[in-house]
Image (cartoon, rainbow, N blue to C red):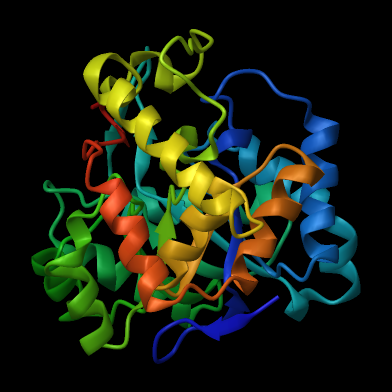
Length: 324
């Protein structure tokens, strides 16, 4: 497994990271034991970087990840890099709201530490920018907790350039976690160049477009009601039809080179970002995804992938308040 240092100051991590949103309950039902086996198999494959969030089932994903990694954490804590995110608060009845206030972030950090079963979080990220809380307050609170030893590194997720600049005026942004895949390339014009210029590590989430780039779906695919994709415009109508057609062509491209379409999609992201966050509920899935770190795409292959993807539709993904 290839490794990289995240930005100028971050930890050294595997280029494929294990993402755990799918373990929080928002992606439909799953086998928890199989998911834990997948996490442990990721370690056997050389994956040392695991990303979760307080909002993924509000503790469910963090607890499952902590349980799956318990033996590794007890044997050699420094061999595992755990990232989590905070700043999304559940409302009393239903729904959530962004809350990056110092008080809620501190409460969230304490909850995450308990759920994960660790004394320090290796990378803590603000999950979404909160327009109601000045960035100086958010950054200052995280700096305080870093000084206390609760956090080793601090990053942000879903931030734009202006938001990162405002945050960094108080506490440097070390990492950025943006959505990035062949059907969602909005970060290329400003955000990626800014991150490179300022030594910010980029952890791309959803490199498989929430499953679109796995080749498992067609125009008739339907999801469980508890799966957020059942309400997402990216998985209905003309957008789905056109993107499924693109994936079929990409699958043929991948097969001719001895790879799967998922592996090609992840390798394409890794040609531009430091780390690709991939979700998996089975050992077979994480094994296939981890292998993508070893695929070196040539300039000609990258150009052909983009030529094929040009016939697709750019899509949005999930947000805290709803599904785009």
